[in-house]
Length: 117
Image 1: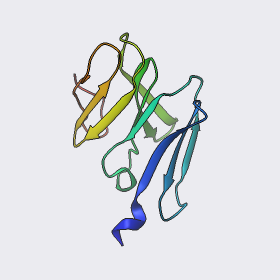
Image 2 (image 1 turned 45 degrees about the vertical axis):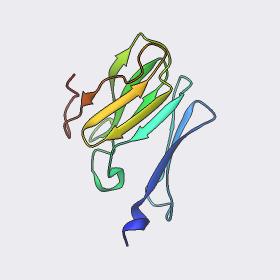
Image 3 (image 1 turned 180 degrees about the horizontal axis):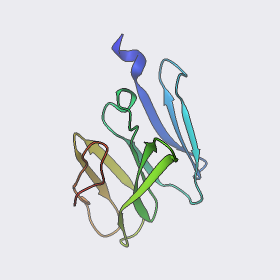
Image 4 (image 1 turned 135 degrees about the vertical axis):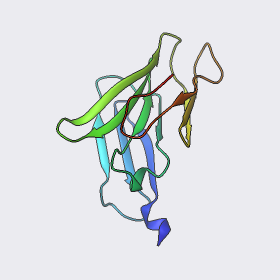
């Protein structure tokens, strides 16, 4: 059933990102970070991909993904314009809102590679 693969992500106590299944606890993720997080977004079809990419926002916009040997790989996409308050990820585009721009990127995300601005 398709609904069993639904996942949600949320910020828990500002320093943790939790990714949980709506109908199952299989492969739930809890990541502690060293900075307060203001926003988070999952890649489309997060539960179906091997990369398990998600984006977090604080003073920077960071792409996080599952890495084969290192566990979790982080790539900075943007910084320097204030806190990232909202993130939307649709298809291969990520858009965000902060204090200085109302739309952010967009960034084109290619599967299993670094972002292209």
